Image 1 (cartoon, rainbow, N blue to C red):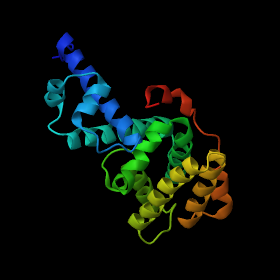
Image 2: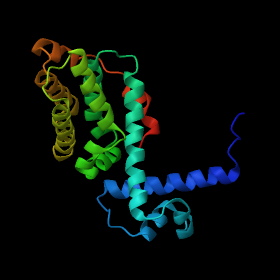
Image 3: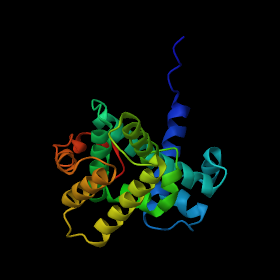
Image 4: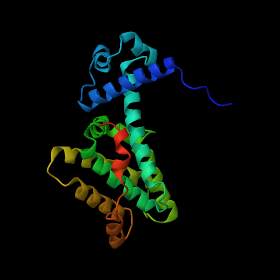
Length: 216
């Protein structure tokens, strides 16, 4: 039996939840995680009562906001790499696209960066996909690292530091920087130097095709 179509009340609840999550993402991006619930509801243009219909606390809202941002980014990566079969290429493409996102979607970038190391242990977004691709690379012999989890830690640290560098140095070429770090990571993981450079310079899928629905 098909699910019933959303009612007007369902749609209104969804809009309220989305408004609260977007407001929380804006506050996180600005580093204002100490804001009061009233500040968040005012930014979302919803009442205090509406807040507690969706979240039991500010911390719960912030967790949902980060997970939403991570899931949106992860969905973009899945869509743009779905036809690739080589784990090295999938990893490289995802890393290069994420590097370019910092300039194209600065608010989403700042949500990711202000969440910090917690991203590396999240079940959402970038971390599980990078871990999956690295483990697949080891399993298939594309990567020759001794410990896939330590390789993931290297990649996660590089991704966060790259994002911070691109915000700190706005004149730096983000594409060149992302591609160079990708090449260096592939070489660290055991991909021959010439191949690592070629993979990290391949044409990328059209990132702008999916970004309009992401956080600005």
